Image (cartoon, rainbow, N blue to C red; front, side, top):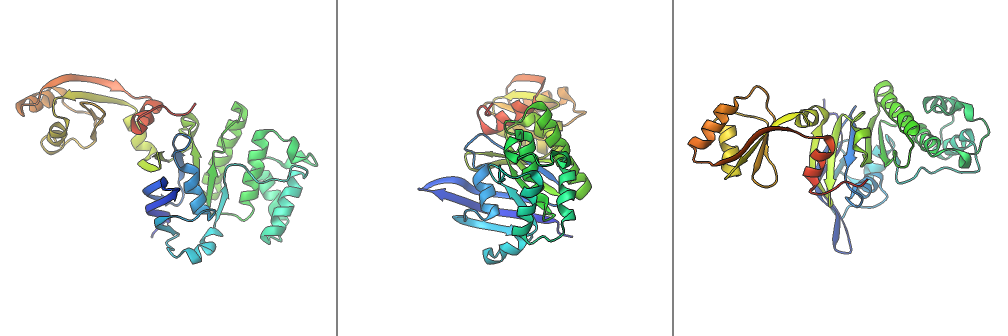
Length: 307
């Protein structure tokens, strides 16, 4: 059974001859929680805006639930909800009245749904308090409540963790996990708060300068942020070929400069050294090291992440 919700192929958006999203390929599968990670200006919001229909792609293909015809995407988007940049709320209205207004606009007649989503986001006790008086965390949760009114299968959130205090972040993490695990909602969150995403994401999409640098699941990421063997060698391309073809080491890759990282466990370091030297490759470094989560992403995007 095909569980693909979104698939992009060579998808691009160009403004004034500048590619903001540059020929990206990615696929979103049902039931996962994706972290879309990158610095400010990486193209994250533009990508979400294209999926939401707020801007059209310049070129490339986009399929929503397998549908590639843009004229039919409105049907697919009925299964999706978006919060792009900031939640749309009426500050003079209570949480209930905001949801009532949105229900009328969306044609949702079941008033019980309002109380259901208020309970999901833990805003049942706000009564007649105006949304403009809410904390930032409460406003974000109200935004998600509005998005959940139509019972979406796929929820896309643009920087929902920005500016939240620790308590607000904890509430948001718990809410997102509840949506995924209890309601089987597929979620994509754009953010640069790695430590927060690492507690909830099942998959990561790393974006830099409009390009997808890597799409990786949490199991592989955790393995790569554990101990690894760092090999400094005169010819890293030939060395990588030797590791894979001669020693049958699966998880290894070239790092910046003249280094290779080996993530496989239970490897014979002496055999690696002997084999590389026998191929006339000069070793200048051979030692175990460890990545932090931040170091891993920085190594992928070639610079510092935003604070």
